[in-house]
Every structure is written in structure tokens, then in C-alpha cells.
Length: 302
Image (cartoon, rainbow, N blue to C red; front, side, top):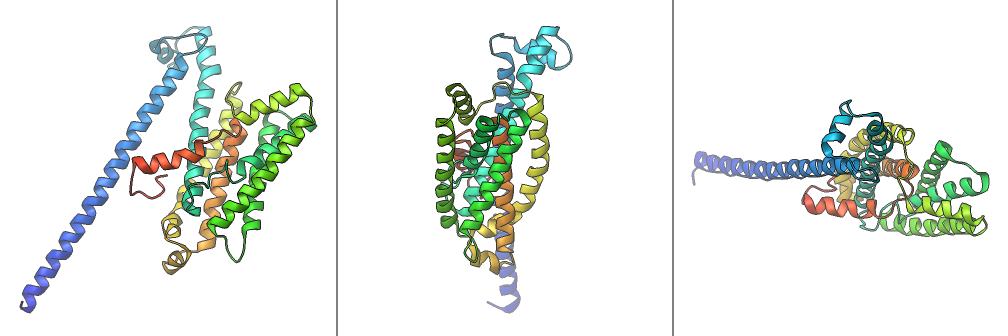
């Protein structure tokens, strides 16, 4: 094949390869948009149902009318003061736990690495239960204690797992050990407490939105408004890290800095969610695998 003809054929092959890559990326983006839209519609539908169903059942039309400023005093109190803050808080808590689990599992490359299994939630529980049962702390102070406990547990796990860097398997094992130790603190404090107080603590440990109001929603919404953009910014280092430390470093990624930023965001997300609703189990654990199944080939599918 002559020189000009060979060059033309090579250009055609490159153009075809570029078109194929663009088509694959386009299909991935379209699937992501379709899945996200479907999940958003489902979430809005369930949120509307949660505003309608309860001890006082309301037609959807009456709920919508109340949300738009109509309705009588009783409807406004039930929808706007009792049900709406709990429903919105549930969405925020689910989003925070889901993002946290997705980041942990992707950074550490381990499907078991969720905050409720590697000690983050246990840190929040240990501080919250101790503060509530021994010092009678409640309300926002209790939530702040839970957040501080989760951050302290995350920092302790990271430092204990540090050996010229942090390997995913080592951090998971250290986290499980720290979590078991903190869980023993929780059960010891409960065993030494009054039965009635211990029952209240156990209810918090199960995770619940009961009794939550706008006082819990607004701090949670503010925390998400800060943490979600920070997580998205830190997630730029996620794909290189999933290739391994050596490959990520070869691509110019600051491995430990990127990993620390991602783990810090994930810990804070789990902490604020636990502070708002208690250590709700398995949301962070299963959200990421479901997301990756719905949007295959999109990495962590955050």
C-alpha cells in the first residue's frame, strides 16, 4: 500500500475508533440519565405516599393542595410539621449513607467496606449511647456527639492502619476490630444502665426517624450541601485509585492525599446520617452494589 493511501486508511481506522468510543460513552451517559430519572420519579412517588399514609390518611390531592399553601389547620400540621420533615430527612439520610458506602467500597476495593461494618457507625453509637445514658445528653447535643464519635473512630482506624500508606484490606480488618471494641463499650454501658433508659438507647441504635422534625432536617440538609460537592470534587481521584496505588501514582495522582480526602468525606457523610437518624443498618452496604448493577461500567456509580 502506497504512502498516501496508508495514511488515509490509518486516519479512517482512528476515526472509526473515536466514533466507537464516543458511541459507548454516549450509551453509558444515556443509561445513567435514564436510571437517575427513574429513581428520582420513584423517590418522589414514595415521598408523596409517605405524606399521604399514616394514622390520618389523606388523598394525594389534599396533600398537594396543602403543600401549595392550601388545606385546613389540621392538614397543614400533619403534612408540614409531622410528615414532611421526616420524609425529607429520610431522603437525605439515604443519600448520605449511599454515597458513603459507595466511596468506602470503591476506594478500599472491598465490597465489605461500609461504615456500619468497619467501625464508623460504631464510633457514633459508642459516644451517643455513653452521652445519653451516663450524662443524660439529648437533642442536638446528642447528634453532635454521634458525629464527633464517627469522625474520631474514622481517624483512629486510619492511623492504626497506616504503614507507609493505607492498604484497603488492612484498613477493613482494623476497622472491624475497632468496631467490635466500640460495640462492646455500647453493650457494657447499656448493661449498667436503668432498663428504661437502655430501651431508649436500643431504639436509637436500631435507627429511626420517629419524632424527627425540621430541627434535625436543616442541619442535615446543610451538611449535605457542603459534603456532596466536596465528595464530587474528591471523586476525581477515584478512578485512578481503583487501578491500584502504583498505577494511580504513575498517572500523576497524589495517592494518599486523594484517598484521605475521599475517606474523610465518606466518614463525614456517615457521621451526619447517623447523627440524624441513628446507625441505620445495611443502607450503605447495599446501595453501592445496586447502583453499580443498574449502571454497569460507570465505576462507583456515585
